[in-house]
Length: 77
Image 1: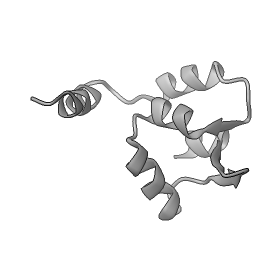
Image 2: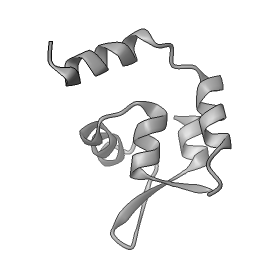
Image 3: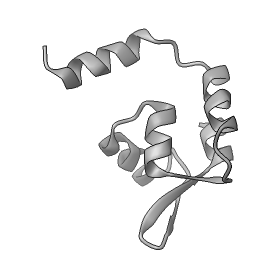
Image 4: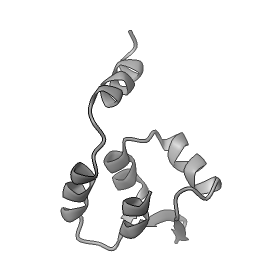
């Protein structure tokens, strides 16, 4: 099995809980998160991150050429 697929399967096995998301968000000092932080917190791939923004499922703002996501958008996601 390829490492990417195995990583994806591991993410499916681990429960996605709001409590876990809050715990990770608590460690972020800023009100807006960078793409990497959102990907890590929500367990997205980079492509999924962009798809969620394009479909307006995830609120994001482009600041200086980089995407920023408000913490509240992650909580409401």
